[in-house]
Length: 204
Ligand SMILES: N[C@@H](CCC(=O)N[C@@H](CS)C(=O)NCC(=O)O)C(=O)O
Image 1 (cartoon, protein in one colour):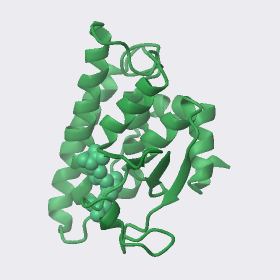
Image 2: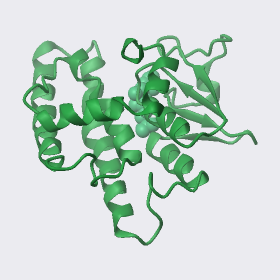
Image 3: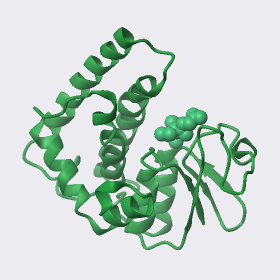
Image 4: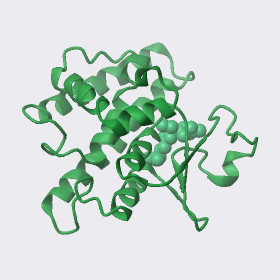
């Protein structure tokens, strides 16, 4: 398999999961400014959405949409700790988080990286995100991960997007549970290896 990624982007979540599951994969770094692969190929030809993550399977099939790629990676590896089985209630709690992270957190960060939005508009988005993170913080009270004591696909996703906070002026310093969560997840071997492979300073 090949994972098309960009350092520190949301593609970090499936990257972590590939390492959690011990899958055989190669990383392909996409230049999201130019939408080019390292070989200079037009990335839109691989993924017409122009976005990472993209997982190219060995048979040539490609999968996009991070939460779906996460589901594929966990289920392909039979890792019911990362994504509980069909019929178990906790599966729906994990999927509930996946949906919340993708629609309420991930996509609320996007305008903050867009130079077309002015400072006042960005400040409003940061304020709204702060409220959402206060709620996430309350959900993490007394537990290590989003759905309890078990690390799941949703925790990998929350980790990847929450690390954007300092880059967009989102102050999480009052949210002790979120900070403890980030520190906890950062210690996982899979996460350390993923950050190192993405060339991010934190990995050292
Ligand atoms: N719905 C997609 C969104 C992916 C996404 O927003 N990717 C961003 C990086 S975090 C991206 O590739 N942006 C570059 C672009 O849109 O051109 C998913 O969940 O995978």
